[in-house]
Image (cartoon, rainbow, N blue to C red; front, side, top):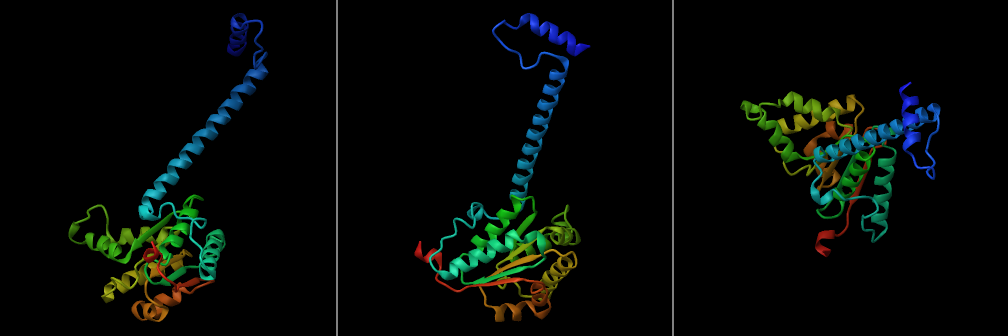
Length: 241
């Protein structure tokens, strides 16, 4: 009834040369339904954008690597081409496996760039990613002692890290000095393996040294499934710049 009255009033005020979008109640209801659907889609899109933006903020990815992608990785030889291809393949197949990855090589060789490219790719597709250095990991855990960090406990933090879709440890081998630190890393990786969650590792060390530091237990878990181990054994980008 209200719609009919509205149409009558509309006809009176519309100039003769203007053709209205709707001339009857059915058309008006259809228009309302269409506009409501468009508004709903717009709101969903805006919420998704805000959610992705929030995920980026919480990802731990440093500003230097926020714009990293597979397309802007500088390729100068076959080694570069290989690591980009395999890292991209890893990201695209992320939903189909629980494989972890380990990137080894000297500083400035592009490990962080590709780890960030994987992270950025996954975040844009709704995944939760978190990248943290071993020193920051231990600092955060130690802040839970003696109530320095009242809102966070060691248990809560480890539980949070265990549920992230992809957790990446950076600077493996620099900070690990005690059995406690190894135990924490082992505990996190063990929880993640049990939940079928992959883990990434970046280190300036070689495979032999990283195995010696972390221990066979951790390394075995990092090799589960079709894990990706890449050696970035070439000259630093930073030196060239």
